Image (cartoon, rainbow, N blue to C red; front, top):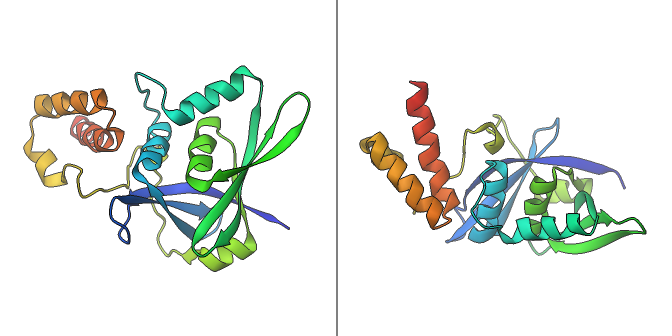
Length: 197
């Protein structure tokens, strides 16, 4: 079965489920998108890696990567290989010096690891055909620094605009200390936009 390569094009607050997020995967060189609902911790893990932030202590997915690298295990790709009753199933394709293995994974965890390893993300035509949506306009990628995630408990743009640069820097430091990286990214983006002016 032919694999279709995907990339993460957006991470946003889920409009369908409270306290959840949606990661949007886009078909490479195509217009179809797959929205996948994930938890807040997994969204934060993906956002931290996409934004190239460095937490003071390793997050769970960083620990997993460090563990795999310590034992010379390579992550070659992830495949979103099944969709049942709205739940996506994935597998990690890994290898060591002696063997290659397919490991069952939650899709959110697989994506968090894919971002850390820089490995490709794939699915199959039947899955993108069932869950995919056509997008007219191109969505911005998080990895460009133009964050497209929004959360109802994040500081609103109006609140950020009212804060001074010193207040923003202070709030950013607080959020980083509490490891609240999703909110920190919004403040970092506001500081970047002011520096660009």
